[in-house]
Amino acid sequence: MTGKTVNPGAATAGRYLPALCSGALLALSFPLPGISVLAWIAFVPLFVAADGVSPRFGFRLGFVAGSAAYAALLYWLNVVMTGYGRLHWSVSGTLFLLLAGYLALYPAAVLWMVRRCEENGIPLLCSFPLLWVAGEAVRSYAFTGFPWANLGYSQYRTLPLIQISDLTGVYGVSFLIAFANVVFYRIWVSMRHKKPYPVRALIMLLLLLAATMVYGVARLTRAEKGVTQRVLMVQGNIPQEVKWSPAMQDATVKTYERLTREGCREPGTLVVWPESALPFFLQQEPAYAERLKNLAREVKSPIVVGSPAFEQEGGRVRYLNSAFLVTEEGVAAGRSDKLHLVPFGEYVPLAPLLPFVNRLVTGVGDFSPGKSAQVLSSSAGKLGVLVCFEGIFPEIARAYVEQGGGLLVNITNDAWFGRTSAPYQHLSMTVFRAVENRVPLVRAANTGISAVIDSKGHIRGVTPLYQEGTLAGEIRTGQRETFYTRFGDLFALLCLSGSAGMAVACYRRRRRD
Image (cartoon, rainbow, N blue to C red; front, side, top):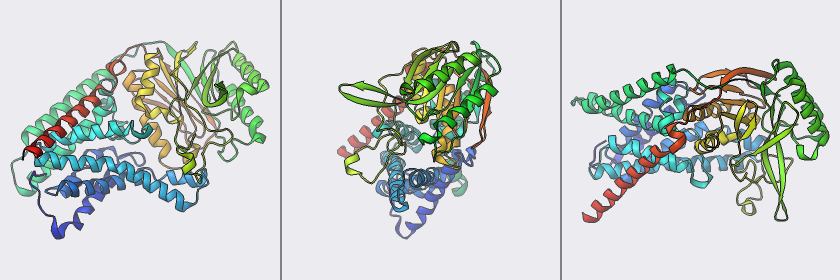
């Protein structure tokens, strides 16, 4: 893009089409269909549309691109809200559009700032990658955070590329893709206007890619260390419509007991049941608790099981979404509580103002978040349990590994999503939690997708959606502390600092002028 601002004039409407195209390309790069290569050129049409426009019009174009991308990526929210939230389609559609519009503000703000920077002599190659990562970092924390579909997640299957996540987190991959988009845009401009090719920019990109791939190959060929551990994921495939029905409790428990006996063929196997596999308070059901303990003794293996919990605090009851550990000796050895709750799923923010919105999780009252990350100590090592969409939050997985967790366990119930792309998107993001901390991650989902992921991001096995069954595998528990585990999102903070520096420079120049 040029630094000079021009009046788009009659061509204004025509600039929205390339912005929509960018949004579509961005959405297509994520599952499903997951054409990851499209992420590397997704912003080129948007840069073409924004060439020479004012910062204000750049904001509009960014908003159009972002709205198209997030509307296509998150369409499944309507399935959740109408099917399980019992909302009328008009209310569901309004809330969906509001969320897509909110998320679109981030690329809109990036494009606005990019145009400001170019007006002040800061080239796109410097501004866009920094600003994009800064936007992703802010989105990951603002209003409880929603880091769904960060740009880097589109590359979850390109293992040599994503190994840098143990240094930079997913943000390093996002930065590289954003940088490449600018270089490809400049090449396109050079070809179209018969200008010299951006040789320096291309060399910089090739050097970054080469360094990333060399590092990635080195990490992939490095032998895994740690203790070999057998694991068994149990997928009960309990329909969401009947999951919380009291009449289904015994049938549900029998399903998990049967699958565990069929799948657990070696003593010492870590058995994992999904989130809320027991859809009742295990603390108040001594008969079912005893059956679980007897099962663990029978198969001679520890069992991690999801169940709601409660505790008294200050005269009131706190409800928790939790995971319980029962050892192979049949001893209840600990509980891990979900730290990051799903807004509108497990509690309704601003409930007095939104009386027409129902919680998705029925059967208990509003959940409360757990107080701190607590690893579960088992014969399989120390376990860090990520409940449901906690798997998309890097800081939570990192907290468990810092506590000594050598294996991340993600228990979830993706039945809410139906047969949409959401379960695939959800799985793709958990791959990065394993690579960032160099620990394996096992995932048990009620209706799928259950998976076994090693510390390098290989998906060693998956289950199909909406099928009852088990998934067995072997992993090596993690033992190394990575740069990311130690320092967290330092790379993202550097991008935020660089973005703030550019904003200050633009402000000072504008004041001076």
